[in-house]
Amino acid sequence: MFYVIDPVLFSIGPIDVHWYGIILGSAALAGLLLAILEGKRFNLSPDFFLDLLLIGVPSAIVGARLYYVAFKWDSYRNDPLEIIMIQNGGLAIHGALIGAVIGAAIYFRVKRVSFWRIADICAPSLILGQMIGRWGNFMNQEAHGGPVAESFLRDTLRLPDFIVNQMYIDGLFYHPTFLYESIWNLAGLLLLFVLRRRSFIKSGEVFFTYIMWYSLGRFFIEGLRTDSLAFTGPQLLADFMDILWAPMSLIFGDAGNMAYGNIRIAQFISLLLIVFAVIMIIIRRMKNPYLPKYSDPIERY
Image 1 (cartoon, helix red, strand yellow):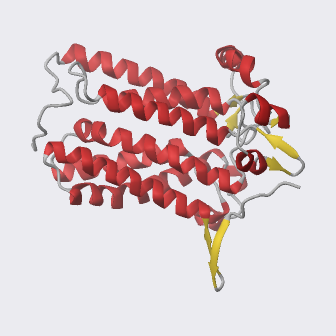
Image 2 (image 1 turned 180 degrees about the vertical axis):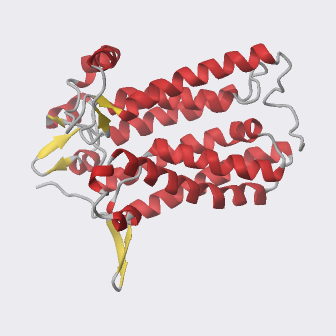
Image 3 (image 1 turned 90 degrees about the vertical axis):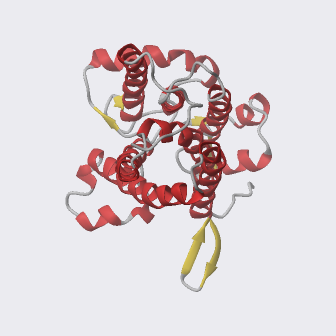
């Protein structure tokens, strides 16, 4: 008998308060506080970041939902009202990032500040929020990987009982991919803390490093999951991605089975984002060798 945490923290009459919502709210608050602390170095008021949060969170939710629905359209085309039922699940982190970036870009334009300078400040907040937010998946017993032996969790990974127990779902144990990604994001957070104090870092490059770091981890961790959004693409591309992922199997075993398609969308997008970030850093440095440094004052235009 394994003790599993109830996803509902408490109820008020007919209203259930879920751990998932509490954790996501805590993630947003932690990211806000981190941005406010760093923003003080650049004479940016707390209200600037609070307003950004009030715009960024709804933009992220809309982007996450539209992204998910777009790739699962067959499940929604006959029931359009289900599109707005986000309580039933179906949010994609890449869509959230796209939505948040669009909302932030509009906000920064209104405030007449550089997108890249503020994106650099907010990059650690983003990865911190993702690090915390993945524990909401843990509470819901979702976004996990494929089946594993109990001994792998207890003896190989040496995980505590509360994690092992929560990974016991319908008679099987599963890869705690939420934990893998959370730890990866913690390492990324520390990396960003170090990089933003280095004198050679130019504007935008902390944000691009965040994109590359998160995408690299997401590419490998996504391969373990069994609930990936996917599409059917050229077999040559699918084989190429399998070769890139192969080193992961030395530690974690076989990749998770896909319900459909042969290419995981999150893996494909992650590769594109890594290439995009590298190219952007090179092009921006070549076009303007006098880019402002991360530590330079932020001016309004």
